Every structure is written in structure tokens, then in C-alpha cells.
Length: 67
Image (cartoon, rainbow, N blue to C red; front, side, top):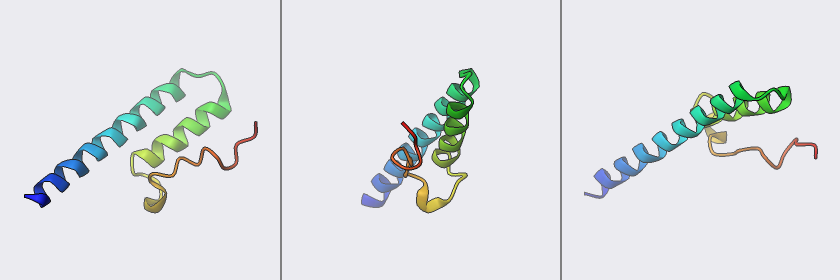
């Protein structure tokens, strides 16, 4: 039964990641800021699983951002 629950949790997590990626793509589409657009598209790629697998949950927010 544990395997079934784990599979269900994995599916929920994957769906949430895809929803987040979709929201980021929509934000990129709506923003006029080219830096924000590029950042949102990079993040969407990571959350959708298109990026490097080990970095899938690493948002990179604390790295390379100039304040």
C-alpha cells in the first residue's frame, strides 16, 4: 500500500511542478521586463523537468541575482 501512496505523492508533486511552470510561462508572457521574462522562462524549464534533473527543485533565486 505504501508504494501506491508514494506513487500518488509523486504524481501530485509532478502536477504541482507543471502548474508552477505554467504560471511562470504566463508571467514571462505578460511581463515587459526582459530580465524577468528570461528568468521566468529559465525557472519554468527547471520546474517542468526540461532542465538538468539534479537542479529540478533548485530555484537558483539566491545565485546570480543582482539586487
